[in-house]
Image 1 (cartoon, rainbow, N blue to C red):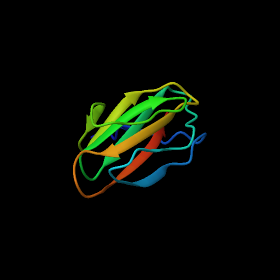
Image 2 (image 1 turned 60 degrees about the vertical axis):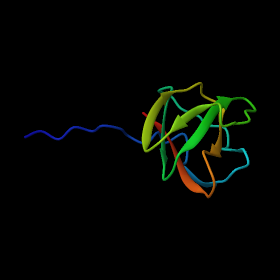
Image 3 (image 1 turned 180 degrees about the vertical axis):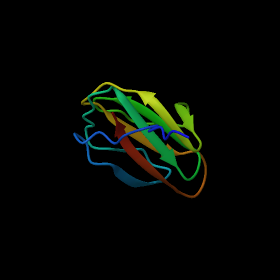
Image 4 (image 1 turned 30 degrees about the horizontal axis):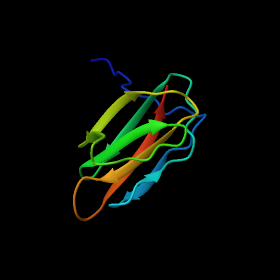
Length: 94
């Protein structure tokens, strides 16, 4: 049986974790060679990508783990889907 690497962390970006609340917040600028970013959340979280994004509850909803195509140098804004909070983990992928 062979082992397959599903994702490899991009060494140009240090993975980040943030607490997600009912107020939009941003990651730092994400540098990625592959143009891919993996987002994992512990609860429903809306995300928006851009140079200076502000997330709203109308933006893309992430539940669990997703991989997105991403423009290197942009940031990710995030806001919790409902009451309470969650944790978002952001990792650039090779």
